[in-house]
Length: 166
View 1 (cartoon, one colour):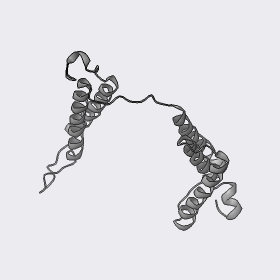
View 2 (view 1 turned 90 degrees about the vertical axis):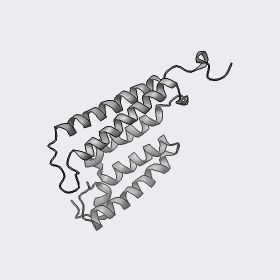
View 3 (view 1 turned 45 degrees about the vertical axis):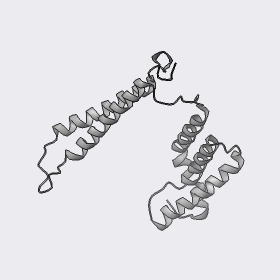
View 4 (view 1 turned 30 degrees about the vertical axis):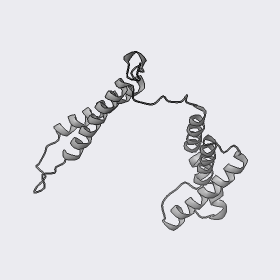
């Protein structure tokens, strides 16, 4: 028996079929919206406001077909079991930043988010990662808030070094 025997082939990859459906849906929405745009001809080049959505929509539909064919043929490699814990660390860090940004300021909130993300990628020592993240975030705050004059939330750390900052 060779490896092409139908009895020994893998079943269709359901996750890839779902991805193919999502790609096809997104492509269909883009093509529908592009068809509704008034195509003014694009002047001398022939490229108008509907051209880019049309190209992207066609590309997404082609990717959907390709993904579906590969899924039905079982060509996708077997995926390893997923570990959701790192995702929880990243989402937790982002949630912490969003909740504490106005209270703690940019440096502290973003530094803790950095440390949680580093924890998700395998850096176990939060006692080291948090101060490093806060220091790096403070440097980013300095560049954006003080040099480029962009508005980033200031907290206790920023007020410690720049008492007049808002």
